[in-house]
Length: 247
Image (cartoon, rainbow, N blue to C red; front, top):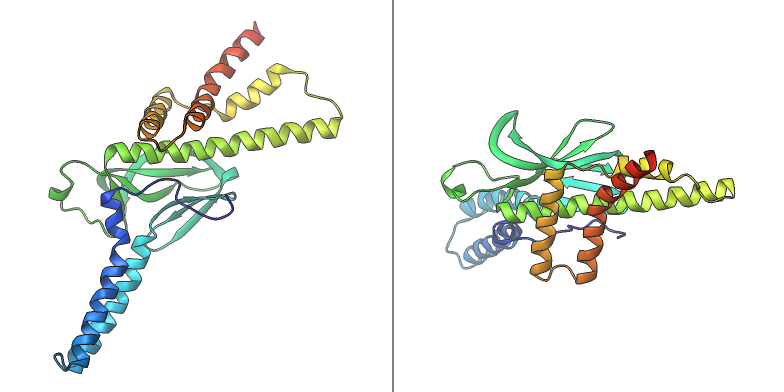
């Protein structure tokens, strides 16, 4: 994974943001054609084209909203800023409260907790059935249906667990090569891994449910589904081994 990419698919509501730039460009072409044929005077066309250019910049930024992952970390692209958090600085990817200018918007938003700074609120927000009647501003945000929101959250957490697994494997290899021996203390290895994979039970159930839905829709192969489940259940198995080791 060398480049930044969205690790999730776009539903219908989120795809509307991607259709913004083509719509603005089509309007600009229409205005130019009308001007060439003399149907609209220049005093009207020029201000409209300037306004269209501003709208195009906003529409392009709106189409790029979301959360991206890569080898270096996770990146949140909002309307006015792009925040990149290295994987080593990510403590948790969780379900947070959506706010705007400090005001609670009455929604949930995917939030990235950092070990070296404050939390990062991403533009991905959980919508609801009555969303068209709430009259809440949507510019600069991507609201999606609850089930799709849970799938995105589970996918981002799986990416974080993958990085943790790679880091643990690299660390064990480095320790073994530096000492010239293989690690012989199971309890030490269990405690280190268990601390990294400590996940609340409710969040783990939500991740399993989201992965099951992705597998049923064909988004995950049998092997990928089994691998992700093994990573989620790995924390439970490691805790059990740790308890037996202490006894």
